[in-house]
Structures are given as C-alpha cells and as structure tokens.
Image (cartoon, rainbow, N blue to C red):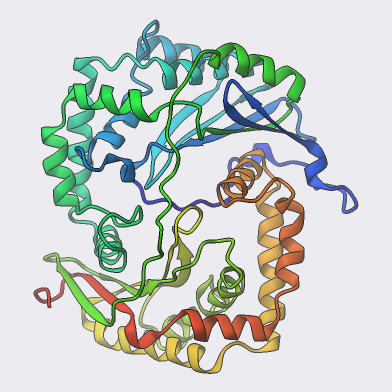
Length: 444
C-alpha cells in the first residue's frame, strides 16, 4: 500500500557505470521485444558482471474495487513466502548463496518487482521471479503472518503525520473511483482483518499475467541470452489486466481546509495543492514541472530559501508533481512545522506560492534549474538501477526508450513563457486544498 511515485532509483555506488559517450544514443544499447506476452526491454551497459531487474504489472491497490481493498497488498506480500515447489527458506538460501536480491512492492496501480544479481546468476534469478509471480504457494500459515504484519504496519501509519496528511490530501483532490483516490488507513485496517485467502487467490488469478507486464533488464546483459530465459520461465503464462485510465481528469473542487488531529506530535505535516488534470506527457506538464522545481526542489528552491533559510520556520519543505504516469496527477507543497510555528509557516508558504504564481520565474532561475535538472537526470542514469527505473518510467508514461535521449533536449527547449503560462493556467492557489496533520484542532 504505497502510493505510486515513479522515479529513477539510485542504487549502490558499486553499480556506477562509465558515462556514455556524448555522441552515442542510449536507445542504440537497448532491445525491446515481446517474449511470452511480456514487454521485455534489455539494455547493455559498460558495467561488468552486474545486472539490475525492474518490472511492473497492473496489480496495485486501485484494482481492488469492488472487493476487499487490502487484497492487492496482501497478494504482493505473499509472493516471496514460497512457491508451489520451494518454501521461503529454500528461496532465501538460493538468493543468499549468490548474493542476489528480489523484492516486491505494491503501489496505487502497479506491483513492482526489483532484483539485482551477478550476470552469471541471471538465469537463476529470472526463474525465481517467474515462480514467485506465477505459482506462489499462498499457504494459510503464511497468509496469517502476512495479515498480522500488514495490520501492524497500518497501525503504525495511523500515527505518522506525513502519511496521514498525504492520505487526506489524495482523498480530497481525487474523486471516488479515481485510481489516485486512496482509501483511508482505518478502512485498510478493517479490510485487512476481514481478508480471506480465497480472495487473495482470486485476485492473483485475475490480475497476475503478462498482459501489461513490462520487464526491464539492465547491465551486463544481451537480448539474445536473456530472451530465451524469459521464454522458458514464462512460457504458458496467461491473463492479467490493463492499467486504469480515467475517462475524464480530476478537477479542483474549490478551497478546502482539512485537519487530522494526532495528539502529542512534535511537528505538524501540511500538504497544500490540487489535482492538475495532467498526464506526464501532456504539453503543459514538463514546463509546469520545471517551474515547480524552481519553487520547491532542493535547497536552491524558493520555498527553502524563504520559509526555511530566511524565516527559520522549518527544516522540511518542497513542491512537486506526482501520480501522473498513467492517470492524471497532482501538484502539491508538503512541509513540516512545529505546532507553535504552524500558522506562520502556512502564511509564509502561501506568500511564496502566491508570488511565484503571480510573477512567474525569471530567465536566470530557468537557466540554472534546467542545467540542474539535466545534470540530476544524467547522474540518475549512471547506475544500472537508476537506468532501469528511467526506462520503466518512460514506458509507463507512454514513451519508447528513445525518450532517454530526448529528455535533456526537451528540458533545454522549454521557454520562460511556457513555464509561466503553465503555472498560471494549470494552478490556482485560491482553490487549493490545505491539509494539516498532527497537533492541530478538530477537523473543519
């Protein structure tokens, strides 16, 4: 039960690659094919011996409706607890003996599988991934343990101010039935307690399959060796569903203030924002992202410079766009304030937001931020894990692998007028939702 935030993941420094030649196109190192119904992308790098694997299929929390909302996460939790032929200890022994790792994460729409291994162990790791996805044991004993672990995690989340603020914000800005509309943690708790193993088995049978499964393999790999392994391990697998794509985007419903009282918290988390109505590929989305980075990304963002450095009201504040890879997404500012500084902090945040919205960004800010965004992007591609994440994100957003080469140019081509127009036309501070979670008053 993790909200989807697709980004380039940076893994261990041991995976650092040699920087690609400026003249070479990254797409030339990739190979994309349909193998056993799976969208397989292999990408060969200069790294020796190391391989990173990243995949996604539509089996996230949003797929639960109209059934038990805890079932998608519980199903994902059962994958590494044994298969029809290997118990969880045998799987762990095989992975530990070669220093490999496999993990599964359930998000809003996707189940993600991550793995890393040495090149010589890739056939073993792919075979284990296939067995865990296709034929999990789904035993009653392990299901009981998974339920208790999930319930414990949910109970801890009830006291997490950041999670409660994000949950309340998502519920306020996305309508019921939208894939980005999260269920309340209390609802997940009740559902987890009531969930049955038969519901998990039915969900697995319906949603797990190759139909919309994308698998990315990056590192010391070649398509001609990887494809036969995928064909062997996944042959005969069928089924699966597509992602949920709303017929119409979420719209801002007007200003609203929501409080989530949590007693005796040393800080209060806030989220201020709105739905954007945009997908990542929409024309205004990238200019708005660049403008938002100027407002609230890192220590050079305006929010950090004003609310933290000049006024000393917080150590944590930023702005961003999210949840827009598959469905239309959101824009928000998130911050944390001491209860005694909350009102001043919100006022300062709103002031910085209004100034940015009214006046836009400067040429100097835009030039510096574009340079920083391209640099950060290129650093993210310097590891096998980061590169796999960028490829998967691009594909889920509707691009092909060529977007890896095109992204820096797309950023550098953005003009100040495009950024400021997107800010003014896509956002409206006067209709945004404000959520406060922590030591605050009753909901209003």
